[in-house]
Image (cartoon, rainbow, N blue to C red):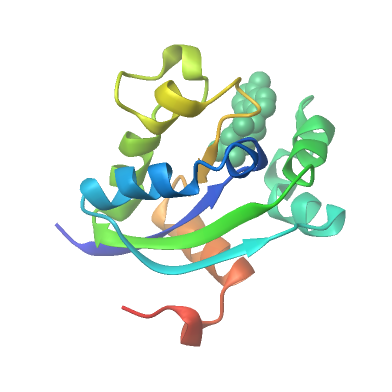
Length: 140
Ligand code: CMP
């Protein structure tokens, strides 16, 4: 096993319902350490850039609108196999497919308002972390 860092976003549907602490508890109980965290109001251009990989998908514009509809909490999680571990804790993208006990099963409202984002690979984790954080902000 190797210690990895991954980028997590607690999305507007979850911050609006005051779920940051409950979601963070799930991360910490699973063995992920929150080594950086900040609450932001994303601008449209930030959200467009962050989700650029999805720009040709039919849901892109709605996704950008949703991600700027309220505050987000961006965070860096660290732990053994953190990228996969975080995805296991989050559950499937569509909450209807998510397993019991996962963040999305418990908290997500829909495939769009699905409470959390997590990097899907180590390579993307490094890109996504540097999108939001300077190295000096990662306190291990
Ligand atoms: P996320 O992990 O943040 O990455 C892209 C997001 O697009 C995804 O979570 C979903 O919230 C959102 N999304 C909206 N509609 C769809 C869809 N039909 N398929 C996949 N992702 C979708």
